[in-house]
Every structure is written in C-alpha cells, then in structure tokens.
Length: 262
Image (cartoon, rainbow, N blue to C red; front, side):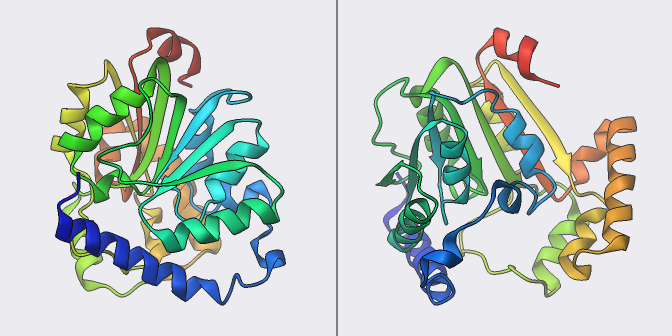
C-alpha cells in the first residue's frame, strides 16, 4: 500500500486538479466526446489501445482512470469496464462523463498497490500515466494477481532515461507540468523488475524529436517531427529509450504475443 503520507499527498493533489476542472465540465454537454478526441490526444494512445486487442464482452480494468475518457472508449467498444482511481474528485468527473456519454462503467475508489479485486478478474488492463506514481514492488504483483493468465496489460508512462528530457521537465515551463511530489518517470530498472513478473514485456518509445510539442504546441513543425520520429524509431530501435513516453505491454500469454503484436 502507498505510505500514508504519500497516499494522502497523491489523493489531495489529484482532488485539487479535479476541482480546477469542475467548472469547465459543470454541464453534461461539456463531457460528451467522440473516441478520436481521446485516442488522438497524444501520439501513443491509439497504437497503445490497439495492443489491448478485441475487448468486446471482456472484463477490462482502467487502472487509475482519472477523468474517465479511456473507460468510456472501452465501454463503447463493448468491454465490461471497471475503472478505479485514488481521487474522489476525478471519480466524480468520470462518473458524470460516463452518464453523459450513455455508457455503463463500474467505478471504484482504490489504491493501485492494493487492488480490491478477485484473482484473475480481468482479461485486459489499461493505464495511462499511472504506474509511475506507484511502488512497482507492490503494484506489480497486484497486476499479475488480477490479470487472467491469457490476458494483457498496456501502460503508457513518462520515461526517465533521457537526461535532456529530465532537465527539461525540471527547468522548462510548459502546459500540464504540474506533478505530485513523489512521482518519478519510469526507468529501465522498473521495467527490468516487471520482466521478473511477466514472461513478455515489450517497450515502445514515442516522441523523440516531437517531444518539442510540449513547448511548441501542435502544428506543421510538430507533424514533421512526428514523421521523423516514425522513421528513426523503426530504423534505430535503441533510440526508443530516449523518448519522452513509452508504451509498456505486459503478458504471460505466448498466444497473445504470436497473434496481437504488430
């Protein structure tokens, strides 16, 4: 379980964020969105969602659901979605968003290091910017416990192996920079630990040159940098370890690896 002070700090931080958002989403119409608004809001989200495979009629966990957009998209795809978060404020927004978009999601307040779910409850687990808030020595075994043996977990996480990115995160102003006191981008040692829990762990980097969008915003220049990233990261896979974000796929299923990895 998260240490009491850390748990309290994480919850208070995200509750404050949710309160700051509440005025903008005070009307149901403001909560309505189409799938593309979520899947294309960052370059890694759509390809990461693809790795979940077919979710129709499957039990799926949204791990650290935040505002609930991923949970809504999963529910629209026919998944039986359970979504949890530590923040009561974000859970309130997520529940309102699910109602506004006419989907059914089971929302639960929970700590990611001590999940209140039965063993092998979920066929798939999705998380966006969740694991780096946690102690993986506690959260990792919980992932193994609640995931079905043939299931898959996909997480999108900030990556911490590029010292230039680390300097920029610390020193440069950019939108959405606020973070909790205790969170740290994932590093190789955490992924190495996950390899002790899962037979198959795949890491893919996103936003090498195009991480400049955090300062420049979207536009033709960033679109060109996205194109350069796609070429470079395919031709020189080691450069993925210098990206801003990574998508981590976890599974113990040989069948999944053979049939789902593009």
